[in-house]
Length: 137
Image 1 (cartoon, helix red, strand yellow):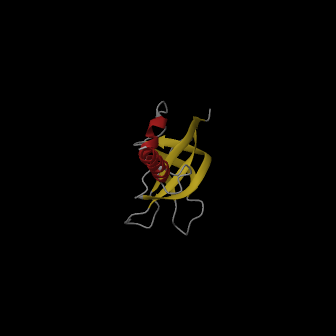
Image 2 (tube, helix red, strand yellow):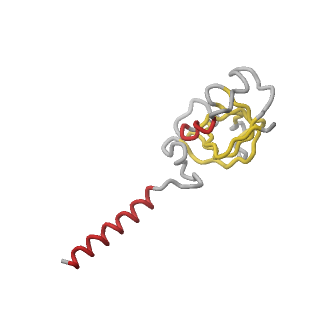
Image 3 (cartoon, helix red, strand yellow):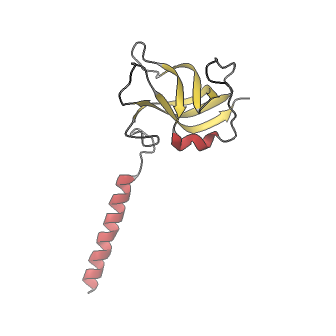
């Protein structure tokens, strides 16, 4: 009886340990688990990049991304991943849609991802998972 209980307990322990480790998302988001692993691929990590925040939850950068790119494959904008939208609370929009932003009052760090599904144009469709956002002034 004791042998059965010990074997059941050890089997449950090993199942719990190995199953949980397999389902944990990658903390560095190399598998795009921080946004949507089925639709995005990890591109690069950006640090303290000046941005403007526009509707609906888009960042406008001061320079082109991705940093390592082929000719004409770049973008100035990235949408915010759904899992990090809550980090934008308290940060008002700084420009409206079609016009160019006057200033870039926020500094953002996070994981930049690119859409890996079919595209109509050969341009990146970027998303950003926010690790840190702060007001510059």
